[in-house]
Amino acid sequence: MLDGMAATLVAGTSLRDRYLGRTPRSRELFERAARSLPGGSTRTTVFSPPYPPYLVGGAGARITDVDGNSYLDLLGNYTSLILGHAHPAVVAAVARQVRLGSAFASPTELEVELAEEIRRRLPSIERVRFTNSGTEATMFALRAARAATGRQLIGRFERSYHGTHDAVVNGPGVPDAVRELTIELPWDDLNGVARALANREREVAAIIIEPVQGAGGIRAADGGFLGELRDYSRSHGILLIFDEIICFRIDPNGAQGAYGVTPDLTTLGKIVGGGYPMAAFGGSAEVLDRFDARRPDALVHGGTFNGNPVAAAAGLATLRELTPDAYARLAALGGRLASQLRGGLQAAGLSGTVNQVASLFEVRLDGAAPTDQWLGLLLEGFHLAPRGMGGLSTVITEDDVDEFVRAAVRVGQELTLTPARDAG
Ligand code: PMP
Image (tube, rainbow, N blue to C red; front, side, top):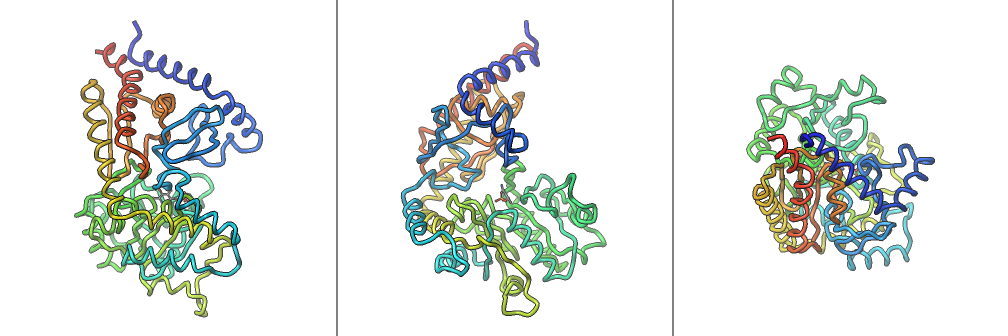
């Protein structure tokens, strides 16, 4: 009889073989890609072995790969497609703008309208600047904080993800001098934060936090902790930055509205571009007006595509569809997914972690390697992040959620139930 570990390996091998059998054209494309792109990929976060499915299209909640396999898209390009694929209102807004012109070296009314819509939802934002990616948004928010405070240190939390620029990642290529300016802070632990910054408080320009961590596992900060962090940072003249690039979607007024805690600066991305490349950083006029080009000492913030009208049109069309009812329905759907999945796993004798906040969730089946879980769910027809994260869109139904729950339980049984029994 197979022992637990061997059974898991056999199940993993069979998943891999089935995936290879169903995705020959994706495999061909991946092998071709590897000759031009390092590791066959241009985006670390979408690679998982043996290779991701190459896609040809998406409509509503479904995406199709080059081999004709169809998947229910539970990730929506890492939570950015909150209305699903090719939503008619977004397509119409984009098509209109594309015909008028894709970009100009001069502003358009669309960026003004999008800025106003963001301010309406987030009163902490008096002024906003647009960027093309969340990475740029956090980079400029930190620069603004350093310029405003005249300080250099940055605090960021364990398991945080704020993009890929030097101040927010570790690893080769990041100069030691830059790394030394970033201090890692413990999650949900104000005493720990105070200890980590002890005697250096007056050197800290900003503390950046995702009120709900995305890559950290859809981990919501305790509301009390966020309030304490607000008071702590204010008392030391440290600017508090909420990175709401993912979690802006949890409430019409973002996580700051949901928690009732007001940051100094906010970064946004994903849904504000309605599926197109667009992100933003904003906050008090006092800090943001440092970018005012009429000032002799203005901070430089160029960007060929900043405020791009096509992305702005898509973002505006998206935010206009997101009524309070839409948020309530998304949150209920997320709640249903989490409670059904927890119940389904338990009934099947399986264990796992299901984290969920509104329409954001992450699923990890105990005993299953993330790659196997990802492959198993793909074979069942569900597309999630390789690490098990998802973000529901308005076009997903309760039936879709229930089918996903059944599929996840089957994957769990295939990957973990056998070994658990044998091991027992
Ligand atoms: N911050 C958070 C919280 C994110 O989730 C991400 C992207 N997943 C980023 C920043 C970086 O955004 P982008 O990938 O657009 O650069």
